[in-house]
Image 1 (cartoon, one colour):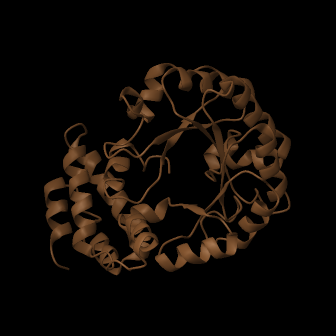
Image 2: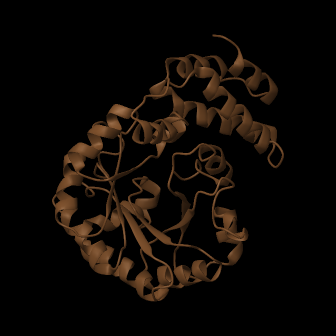
Length: 310
């Protein structure tokens, strides 16, 4: 979720009860210990008394890299700055990241997953937990279980599994049953991720994977009320009404209003369109509005068009 889930977005998405915790965009680690300002940029919550969103949802810091020693050094830096856990990203499918030996590229050799996790686990010395996110493999699923077991052997306390390989990208479907195979072969908690767009998807993902918990990524942006809807159903057995376009628009307008305090309006307009594009797969009205506003560059005109009836 690089470039999408910043601190403001985390704040907006967690204002209603739904999420148990959130994860930052990844901090890219190459071969050196990064200065504190890099960590504060990605996770400004580190400067707060609690490393959490304003509504109290804990925020975990994510690292992405392939050099074990550098990952360990940066994990120590994160812990010194107050991080409550370090998550390792072995799931990013971006070609640029993979070409530079990051993200899902490590899934081609499970021993590299082990080495990265172990280096961070040893560097943290038990002060805070290390967790990991993986996919089902790089080009195929033959090493899916082995990669999960490598993360566990390295010391991961929890594993999030996206139900596709790197080559499958985000093409449907997510293979939740394969997440179940992984869960059956490790003893650490496994969290299912991928293609959970509705309450029905949530229940099917849990049923096929056997996982108690799920992680929402793109779908949380597509429908900011999905997590609260799931939580309400779990608590009461009742279904909340579907998210209206007006509800979605209010979130985007709030986001733009806050962002324009710090960023140029042309940048904010681009960010608004980026979030609106994330809503298109799950909302016909979002698609209609996107087509209407995609060429508008003036921020005020763009926001006026968003709240107008198509």
